[in-house]
Image (cartoon, rainbow, N blue to C red; front, side, top):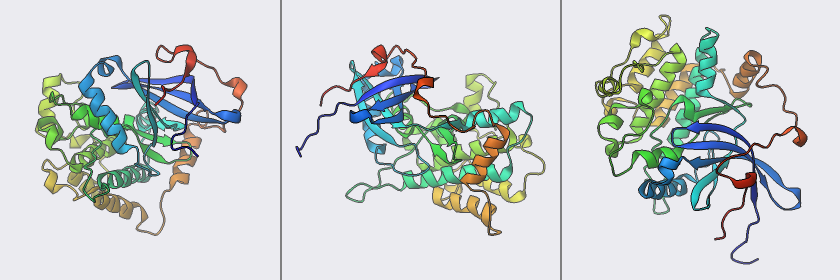
Length: 336
C-alpha cells in the first residue's frame, strides 16, 4: 500500500441541528465506496470566528490535541478538514438529547430529575474529565487539556443512556485567545476563569461541573443569569451561589459534595476529577447497586417516548436540507 491514501469521501448534509456559541452543527452522511455510509456530525466555525486567523490557528491546534481523546463519555473527533478555505471537523453523531434540553423538559413538566440519575450523569462527566485532564504526550509530559466550557449544552446523552462531553477543542481554543477574551457560558463559569483564564487548571472544569450538578438538582441556575453582564461578572468573581434554590430535602452528603466542587479557592475543591468521580460513585453505589446507562435510557424512553421511540432505518424518509456552507449539500475535502 502507498504511504499516502487518496480519499474520495463525501459528506451529504441531512439536517441542520444547531447554531450558536462558536459554531453550527449538522447531521451528515459520510459516503464511501461500494455504498459505505456512516452517520456523523459536522461542526463549522461561525463566520465571526472563521475570519479570525488567531482563533483559527488555536482551533486547529486544539482539534489536533483532542483528536486522540477516545473515551466512552467524550464525543470523538474523526477528522479536521476544510472546504472553500473554511475549517470544519467531523465528529461522532450522538443520537439523543442535550442535558440542557433534558433538564428544561423536566422544568416545563414541573418535575425534578431523580437525584440518582443526576449524580450518575455527573459521575460519567467527571470520569471523562479525569481521562482528559490526565493525558500526557509521548515524552510523558502533561498535555494540560482543559475543557473550559462545561455546561448542559455540552453534555449530550445518547439513546442508550450514555452521557458524553462535547466541544473540547473549540472551547479551549476560544478561551486561550491572546486578546484575553473570556469565553464560556457565564452561568457555569468558575471564578478563576472570569478573573485569570490563562492560569486555569482542571479545577475550573470541576467547578463548572458543580454548577451543572446544581442545575440538575434544582432546575435553577446557581446565579442570577437575568442580571446585567457586569453584575453577573461580579457574582462570578465573588463566587455567589444561590444555595436557597436547592431542594430542602437534598441529602447532606450531596450538599457536602456540591460545596466542595463550588469552593472559591481551586485548592479547596477535589484534588482532581478522579477523586470527584469516586465521591459521586460512592454515593450512588455504596449499597452495591445503583443507576446505569440502561437505567437512564429506560427513564428517557418512559418520560419522552415520542423522542426515543425505536429508530426506523429508512433512507427514503431522510430529508436532505440545504445549507449555506456546504454547496449542493455535498462536501469533498480538499486534497492533502
